[in-house]
Image 1 (cartoon, helix red, strand yellow):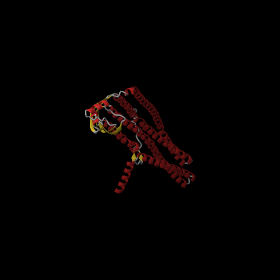
Image 2 (cartoon, helix red, strand yellow):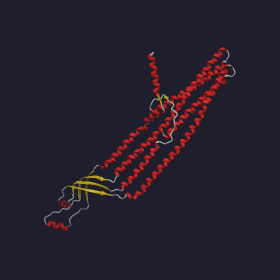
Image 3 (cartoon, helix red, strand yellow):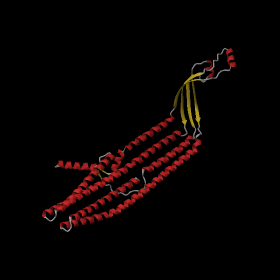
Image 4 (spheres, one colour):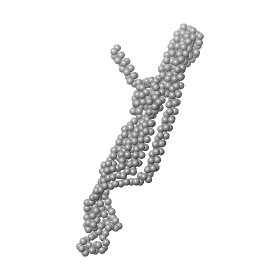
Length: 422
């Protein structure tokens, strides 16, 4: 006995654990959707870009090797060469073929904020990519909503279908008993039985649709969704917290960073450098005119550069950034305008379903009363079976309509929650 109780308890726990709420399905779908992997890829790409820009502060090394042949070189005038020759000095002059192997080292000391502004731009570009990915991923919730509420509606219809089957089966048994007593015709019993079989066929179709939808939702979410849980009626918010708003903010911050980069482009840049090479000729040209041997040569210094060419395009660049800001703000206004229209439509739909649901309960109660009266009349031979079947179907239709209104009402509420992200 204890073993049987334990088995039943485990089965019930299994069913409970397989039931998934709407929020659980949405979180699972977002984690399962391939776009989720792009967050880490964007983050790593941004980190690598910033790290590469930071390396602009490291010493810059360059190695060179060259061999040249010149059409002419610096040489002594013939008078000077003759005079030095008379003094016993052999001034050969420079050779036309020249060689050098060298190394240049430079170190930035002040860059006017160029590297810092480029790092800020890279980070804001990464933030925009993150926000765009969030916008795309947010749409997953809407797709989950569509499948989840369709599954809830099927569940309601299946329950009502079973209730209808039981109701028809009960009347079928009554007619069978009446037929045996000779107070009902066999065709009446057959009529109710045929109606019950037709309803069973509808139940089979509904069950098939549910399995298909469960499979689709489970695949989309990456979890096994066996049972949908009807969400609670909630109050929807007004404030807009959609990821598109964060995308617009990120785009505006990028424009700010780009404008600061224009300022840094006008600043002078200061650096130190060192150059050295081994070759011919060296820095001592007079000595190299006497001897054609290779030598070591070096130079160190400070270099100040100031590129004022950025002034030529500065006005146009600032205007482009201003236009970019206006375009972003325009896109924000368009989004909010369409979003507000969508909220108005959803609120109107919610009000409509509230009014419909207010009448559904009364309609069901009336249809139930009429159906019970029809059952009583049939038992006394006042009406025929067709009238009873019609009343049963009308009561069931009223119950189905109530379920449809309730699920549609819930869907509008959670669609509105999706619209505002509250």
